[in-house]
Image (cartoon, rainbow, N blue to C red; front, side):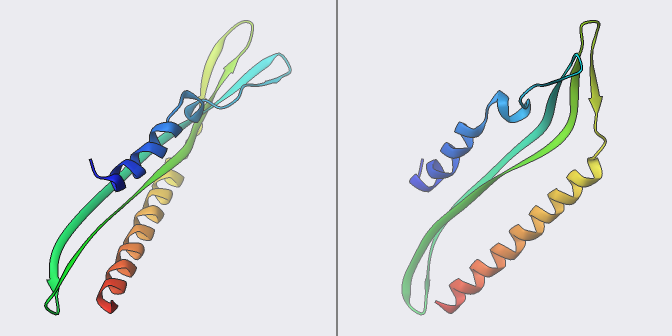
Length: 117
């Protein structure tokens, strides 16, 4: 596995933990509230060889990211435990589209930098 791919995967592996999904419990008025989030990880890498202007050219690159979105809370009392969902699927979709758009802008910027060099 290339070094660049290792440098992308290792930080994601260390941040993948139960604490990423379940937040710290909060106790108030005989109730314990445990926040719950949905965590999504993604990464990609690539390399290539070719030539431009008669000169050999090669490179590699990659990137990764994490998206965390609250999905609800567990409410724990002496008599019962229940899950209270937060219906924020619209915000999650918006965050995903924003991330996709930023990725496209970054890719376009990298391509234009390569053309200049």
